[in-house]
Amino acid sequence: MPPEHTTSIADLIRQGERSLSFEFMPPRDEAGAEQLWTAISELEPYAPTFVSVTYGAGGTTRDKTVHITGRIARETSLVPMGHLTCVGHTRAELERILDDYAAAGVHNVLALRGDPKDGPRAEWTPTEGGFTHACELVSLASNHGSFSVGVAAFPGGHPGAESVERDSEVLLEKQRSGAEFAITDMVFRAADYAELVERSSAIGVDIPILPGIMPILNLAQVARMAELSGREIPAEVRARVERYADDPVALRAEGIAMAAELCEKLLADGAPGLHFYTLNRSKATRQIFEALRITV
Image 1: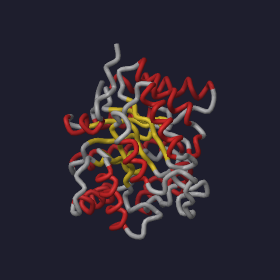
Image 2: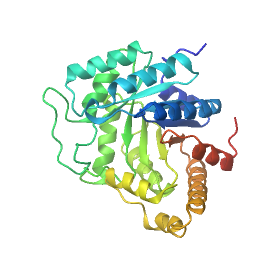
Image 3: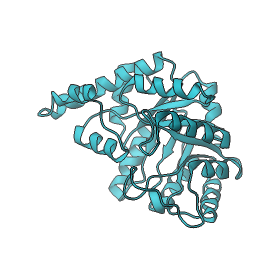
């Protein structure tokens, strides 16, 4: 029988010695659904602190996300967290989505402003009757039922922020609005994460900040994802994998080794845990765990 999932993820992170968590995406078709649930079943034995399911901008995957997180709550031992964005929703619609999550047994959400449809650097246009800032969504979710609310943080700053200092101020505002923990975008260098934590803690941010991990298994794919989030892969990181551009097997092995090194450094430097962007596959994460000697 799965446990009750009303436990706050923030409490789990603070109580545990090291948090491990995985992020999944709603599948596009039946084959994708099979791949997703295979990944979930293969990673469940590692007893992660929580798992999250992404939420498409404008409600494109809302029903799938609620369904998947609800099924995880009902059928597994995992603590699920659903994503929620301001894009394309009124306040009333957001309240209904939160009600849907609660009815499905999901009591943890990641509250995001979300990117404009034209990309993170495009001008933000709020939905009429909706929200302009993530802080507003955090406040809504944290005061709506028994939700524990997480937020995003950005190594190097959000691409739309005036400065990295202002970006940390926004994280502090999210904390004051009710955020209990944060998860970063992809971390490529431990120093970038350390600077984010140091800069933020200096102004009063004391919620746990989990670094986001995605191994570079396909350089073009990861570079595209970084570009979509308004970033570039650092030159020294890119150089390590570009040496194997003509050898996909060697490139994958180097990407796994680099990710394991990064994870070791992050944990040694005091990160409260690791959050893995799985792309609905488990093999790379399990290989990183093998390198880190994390066993079932």
